[in-house]
Length: 452
Ligand SMILES: *Cc1c(COP(=O)(O)O)cnc(C)c1O
Figure 1: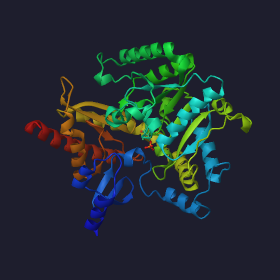
Figure 2: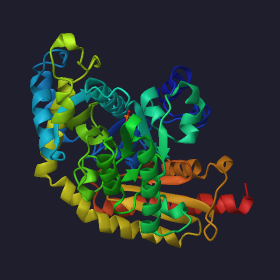
Figure 3: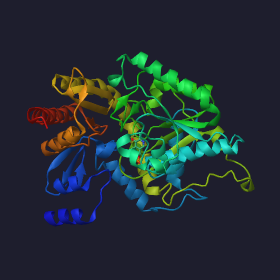
Figure 4: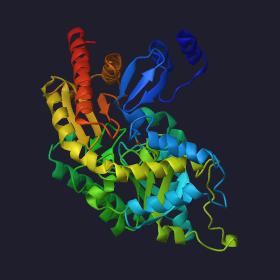
């Protein structure tokens, strides 16, 4: 049975972000999960050290979430949101508006973070067209940004490894620098921040007449390697967007729903975006729901007689799905009753202390963390910050070793990702960091000695 399934998976599947040659060498099929662990078809258990790719909040098979889906299922699984609505989608919209930055009052649903970003881009673009400013068509994107894998989202993304090959398919956008303190010339967060803000201002000064919006991840660039922006940067970007009349699209897909110790990361800097994309943690990691939130001002630019052609012509078959919205509502109820955001904020210092011990290892160059969003950058040489060579696949090999030792995660190049479910306790964190430490030690010493 086990081998049969593995054979089937190798024969018929094509997995996302996966070189299938790697999968064929190290296949894995998950059968079940409970709490912060998942179990494969051989019965081996693993800590879900990356929250099943940055989604999970309360652990797996959370009773209340399971019940919410069953209860909704007794009424209806899905009906459309085109021209009508349903009960959980309506209630969830009210809830989302209540917990998000005060200026955001409208909710547009979709099924994934990438779609939520696509919708934000189209809203921003059409906002100016509907407002008799059709010359504002361009976007400013941040260097190393990641907003999902559909073509629009890729066009405002700039991670060479993922995006370069699709260059000819993308629309062009302007690129602004992002402060990456560990790899900056100055090493000084404030100087690094000010330099980048200065360059952004120069760009906006020159181009703002043709710029519809700027896209930016909220406080942490996730896929780029968990790069935490220095204090004041996001707020600085907000000020420049306001000054130059450019809409600010903030991507909270990874950082939203408690991940960084606030409900949304932009709260850390009291930033109110014009558009905000959310996804991932919105359903506690259960079902594919995402949303684009915006202001009454943007919404009003679309509100008119049909003949005036201001409608937002965008939607997906499963937009506003009842099962997804029902579990999202229960998820948000649990956020309150189980004080999840406070828990993450309280755990943050402990996580930081645990991770800082990794600096004792000879190849740990930088540890970056905000709440339960963490990345450990491995380097060949700590003094010079020389990276491990691409071919060494150090992150991948460490993650495979961690899998062997009982914990799942996926690396970002030479950065080890640590994003445990938000309910993880001190004991859980300690156990997971111990696995991470052992794996890094084993793999980097191998890499060093054979000099591959
Ligand atoms: C994961 C992610 C996305 C894309 O979300 P999907 O649901 O995978 O399409 C967009 N932006 C950020 C910051 C993300 O981390």
